Image 1: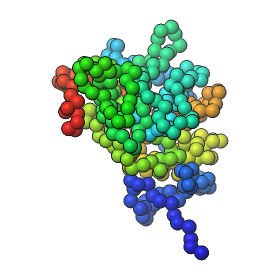
Image 2 (image 1 turned 60 degrees about the vertical axis):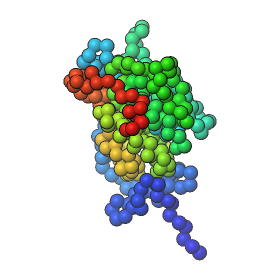
Image 3 (image 1 turned 30 degrees about the horizontal axis):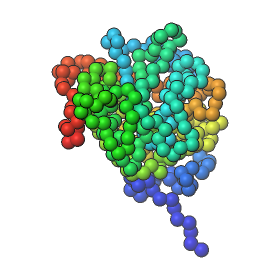
Image 4 (image 1 turned 45 degrees about the vertical axis):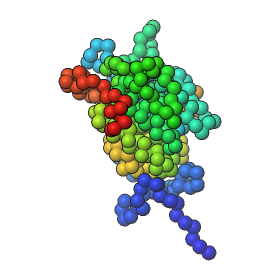
Length: 330
């Protein structure tokens, strides 16, 4: 009787050898990991589980140095990764109750987000908002290239609110195009790029999707925009986390998934944050909040660094925006 074949490696990886061998053999058909008993390990990252209030207070007190400045956070990633759910989860944590401002779909296998939408998060007061906003885009489709071009334009502030994405055609820089912003302000531009990927299927991402993430990262680097990755659905990747999220930084399997993604797209490990989005819960959970606040705190810090970097380079602020024809040559 022939022994069963080992699962195929991710399309972007070479076969593992020696001490770099990954834990891919723990996967089963459909991308769901089998439950594997792992020996206990020391935490490889520290997080303060007992004091969410300090981190929450830091976020609540955050203000950019420039009056009126808005920190813009752009989320992108594969279809169904949990981009909209992450926005809702942040919203819920900051306001102490469940929110569903960014619409989420659990049925369709296509991207539910179709339009470029800015999400403001209200503070506890009339007509007051946090000085940072989120933008969500259509999920990356392996079949089309138009969305990559649109994300480049969005990072430069050229995409107006409610622009409808298309997998086959990108936004034109024609002056008559209603959704092309010819003169973006600093508030229109993106200050931190967040790639959202599901931990439970990160090894099954198609090579075309990984390549798109790489391209977007390269363009963000050209614009000196910092990049962060959010690993969602960690409880589905590691079933033991369903009962105890505090094991997240003691789980070897999850660490390997983060390292795998880091090697695939180039985002450093200290810029990758595992989270569990609110999904089926109707009440907040302190441990879920801790991971979301930890990720948000770092996102804000990286974005604020970007704002200050560009503010201290006045010669860059006077540079004309790259035109669409030039963009096509990048």
